Image (cartoon, rainbow, N blue to C red; front, side):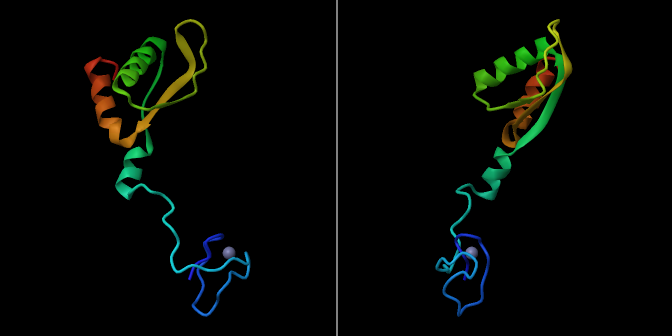
Length: 109
Ligand SMILES: [Zn+2]
């Protein structure tokens, strides 16, 4: 038996969670509707980093055109075409191969 509130497991014979006071359930509902494969594909991986604003604009245009979600870390722009710190690009693991191919195709990486 499990507590739906604190997720603790109890031996049978207990009806309510002693900590939360809520009735125990036989099974906890799945935490995520995604399968492990889907979760793996959706998790973000670091594929690229650059100081070059031109490269970054090209990559953004590609990702937008392909509809690939992405996350950028450290966009500290110095104002002269280069970034103060490298901008790190994260994309879903399932899209990483496609993005790396694009980087190679454009001679960025
Ligand atoms: Zn509980």
